[in-house]
Image (cartoon, helix red, strand yellow):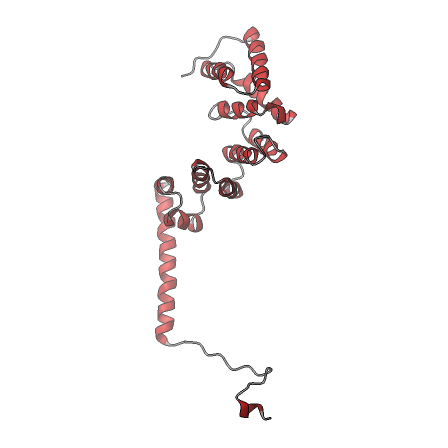
Length: 227
């Protein structure tokens, strides 16, 4: 039977496709493109003008807002990913997969952010039944490689490692003890370490810190007064 008579089309014949290329369609497409370019330029200029401070404040106030998502796409800043990752951790319960993904995004933009490596170590540990996994130990070693001594987050870092002393890599333990040695001359750091001794839950970490404090107190020079 003739295929044309049945209304069927031969499988090897393609009907020509037609597209709307009217002046109105071209004008609408052009307006949408120009609008997207203007929005991108305006947001980028705002971030550059404010030094990112105003934009980051908006992200902190609403980390999952449309503004935060747009900023992440248009002007990716490591601080934006950091704020969103912390917000994911602050949820109840914590959204660990999202926090991990955002932390890895932050590190892909700024691999020298030591605090991001510490956050990654924390996330990996929580996801590994509260033990320092190989990934967590690797993240801690990277944080120490970038910032061997840092008073800003030394107390948290040392407390975290001491609470997981048994599963800490020997290199991580050595880094932690060296940091204590260097910062011990600061009065505020001494106070924080003595307070840490009283609050540690891990007996092994508490013993390690106690022995190091005793050794340093026997041979410590006069303390440097710090607020």
